[in-house]
Amino acid sequence: MALEECDYNGNGNLDECEVFDCLVAYETAWRVENCPAEYGVPDCDCTIIITTCPDEWTCGDIDFISEEVMNYYDTNGDGSINLGDEIESSHLSIMIDECDQDGNESIDRCEVYDCLIKVENDWRMENCPGYTMLNCNNPYCYDDECPDAWDCDDVKEVTIVVMEELDTDGSGYVDSGDNLDNEHFAMIVNECD
Image (cartoon, rainbow, N blue to C red):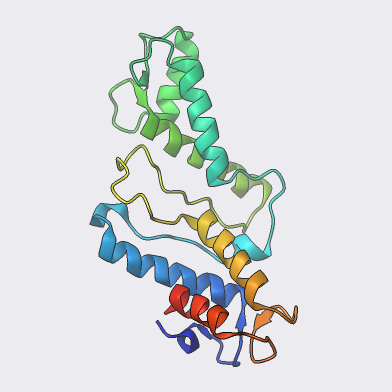
């Protein structure tokens, strides 16, 4: 994808959303080439950059909370939350109703992670209507079949870095007003080409 192909509105410069969308297109092409088909492609929306949702969880938060949930509830260390753990049956029943995707009466790390994303997205729909939904790569479901894949939070962070590095005049755009040297130009071409 050439740099000019990322100028989606055709105005001769790249705004933050165009850089973001370009990086999503780059990541999509990379995943198609490097990841198993079931890994999917990123479903990211630029609103993650231009709007905020106070108290939102990020993919990093989901990673941390998943580990905490497993460390707390998987008391027998078998890698799942089930009747073999020291948990009240009524509490386990609620967790199974909400999180047991395969119906085996046990919740593994993959299911905990997906369940937390569902909880976060339900919270966002209620508290920040119209805000983009959280979309994270679940490291527990894919056995790291595609460890270098970016999730939407990664694309957001790279976009911020690209804009900080390339928008040298602070206009909010990467354009001819920026004093881009060959190294910086090559960086964005490598990311978006």
